[in-house]
Length: 253
Length: 262
Ligand SMILES: Nc1ncnc2c1ncn2[C@@H]1O[C@H](COP(=O)(O)OP(=O)(O)OP(=O)(O)O)[C@@H](O)[C@H]1O
Ligand SMILES: [Mg+2]
Image 1 (spheres, helix red, strand yellow):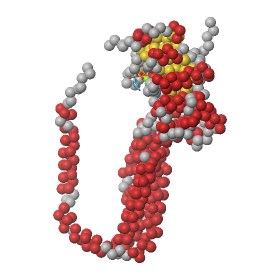
Image 2 (cartoon, helix red, strand yellow):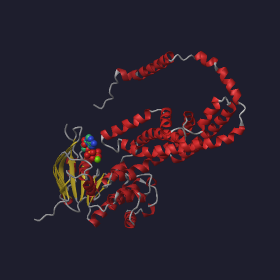
Image 3 (cartoon, chains in turn purple, cyan):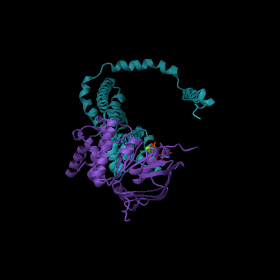
């Protein structure tokens, strides 16, 4: 069987925080191009930690982590930024700049492609301005382009954040509990946005979720973490509902 | 487990708070004893004070014409000094902010330097600059620039440290470099506070610059000193009224502006 090179590859990856907390322990995991992977697990299981090692917002302590076949460990400065601009990230708290316009927020997803002086002066190419409009149209918020970000509802802010990530023309999108603070209707909207981008542009997508029904609905593959260890890893057609009991089992003390 | 912890003896009777209060009162008492402040003398000399007020009660309004020019010069000095100081303070503030510069060495060095600048009293600075650039408003501008720099850089970096770190994280994750992070995620969060602090410092500088003239650093203070030393209290009265007017107007304006900003 000829398998393609995985987009993301964890090889015996461990992460120990400075204070000694074990974030990740011996993770072995390959993620293929275009997959929609959902990570589940109890609070503190290491979901956010795992996600943040992929764009090197967190450094790993041992093992090797490859993205597009390139090891992250030696990446610094310009090379690291070049990697990051191809990885979109979505946060639970949206992380928009509240006092500026939606347009500028979306465009800020593009700065990694610009020389410093040009971006600081706000000299974005007409093509990128068009791209920002198109990104907002995708998430149904084109009419809010000149509104200040803090005038939007939480759900709308998260959709702007999705547009910002899409601006990066990313190969990978990482979403850390993107719908944790949203109502069911906007939850569906945001998850649909992510799924559409995933299917249309083959963007490899990894999402941390706390909701089992959502995981079952959107995932191609479900990964379970418990106390920093990978305890579950199955494609969606092999997932049984009762499996989750084991993932969500409390660690015996 | 899951119990409210016992408070220690210290916490229970607020010994720390009480202790500090006692120390403070003791210090007050000691200072007044050691500096030999004679409260009786202060009050017995009040008579002299009222005599002076009486002589100032008839301002020489003719003098107003002469005062206008130096008053404007004073405001210009304050504006120039504050602007210069602020421009230099901005990069230092970013370098001193804990959430932007991770290296404690860089931050520590910058902060040490800023603390050093802030320990210089403005009158000492004025004396220094009068000695360096000579008598005149230039000395005043330099004095106010250095003074503003010390004050603004601290106000600014403390503001930067209070911002929401979410946007910084988002920009960093999108591959932005340090300057881009500052421009896109930090500046929009602090710009209103920065302008407000600029105005506040400008207010202070207008007040301070009236005194600087005393040391020969230009502005209205020169005239204040002249009138006092020639016992022309009728002129002094005009100057004081003029200064009061300007300070009140500028304070008012800047307060209105700052309220709009925040
Ligand atoms: N910066 C940090 N320093 C020290 N320990 C940390 C840090 N960040 C996370 N941890 C610890 O690492 C472990 C994993 O945390 P992580 O945030 O990855 O969990 P999570 O699965 O995302 O949880 P949640 O569902 O609550 O978001 C936890 O025990 C947490 O306390
Ligand atoms: Mg988390």
